[in-house]
Image 1 (cartoon, rainbow, N blue to C red):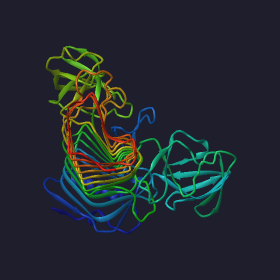
Image 2: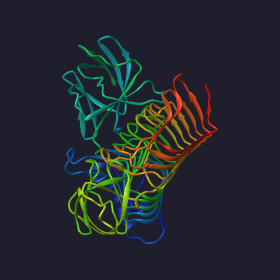
Image 3: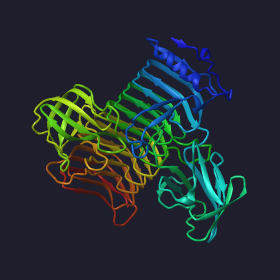
Image 4: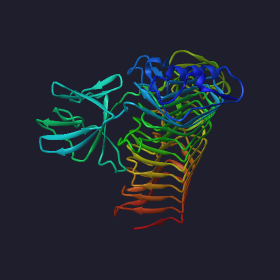
Length: 550
């Protein structure tokens, strides 16, 4: 069934606010059964936040309660309880005005969204280029898409619904830097290059900074300024099933570009979180490009581009919930990290594993019979199984929320932290990707019950045919955060047919893990003291047919 969007007065290139029109369309689609198709006319559609949905939504790994007591999100594109939809954007461009998330999908099934570009009239990250630098002054050019004012000689960046005065050096703002527009590197930095500077506009977008001391600007450098608070996101899917996002491109986001929370079977194909190549902007996402929290089924990210992010490219994980009370067959468990709380992580019938925080080794398995929400942080679980091992102070991991992961054919560049974080018991395949100058590891396999509380142990990981180009730390790092050794934490890791170009001390590091095969890889060290591998307390390791090229 083809839905004519003109009945909702959805038309391109009008310059008018189409937010209410799209929301009426999505509300209409919610009530239609069976297959349905929406096809937009190609062009530009403007969305403003005045008519957007406002919803209190708890999203994993975003904003803590102490940072924002009520996490109200502003959402101009809101899809709720929609099924069997093929949404074709016809390569149109959606421009969002105001601070908001880009799109929400709540409890949707069998939905495909394709051929769409989403950008913001005002980018989430302000960008500055240093044109000239003297001992006590610098001349900077502020990107044309970024707003600023000068008040009493002080430079103030103006973003949607907020402003930032860098001379105050607030810790709520983070900074990034790029050596040049063509550099594959983008860094986090805690240095505020604009502090203690008196500003004077000498031409539109061009500002002269005069320093009494501490001029940290460097000629030719690009600096980026953004909020540390993860108030909004890009595209968020919660409790959705069988979702496809195809040829969908996000140009600017206030935190995670794509975030999947308790979803089952999601495919991202030919997507991007990257600035428009013609815009001159270098950054797109304030935090992760793709974040998967407590998902199941199969999560696929293929043939995509991730560029200009101030956190990781991809993170797939569960959570360690602390057992804080036990009575009979009922345990009370708690979200532990302040940035993850308030959402429903469990389902009846889920299988739980009891985990020791110090060793990260599990023993008893329990089955969830019923769930009672105590508050935003605590849940009571009635369980079947031998509960003797579920002692207060131990943790549980929901091993039913451990998706298979395929990350294949992707290009990752200008990333200030890691490429992939993988902590899932499902089958993970990382194949034919390029990790270009990640500033930390290309792939990190962690697992912890004391910092981020992100679970869990891996059991089947294949890393093959990838290129790791000058990662800032070990290209592949297998580092469970266990405090004591009781047994191997991670098992079943195959690293095959990869190319490593590195100037770190090691290309591959692993600890407290077993059943590791490192075969047919090419190592190209750039430093004289660099070695291919370092394996600490690892069992059943196979090293064969690897080549070191000097």
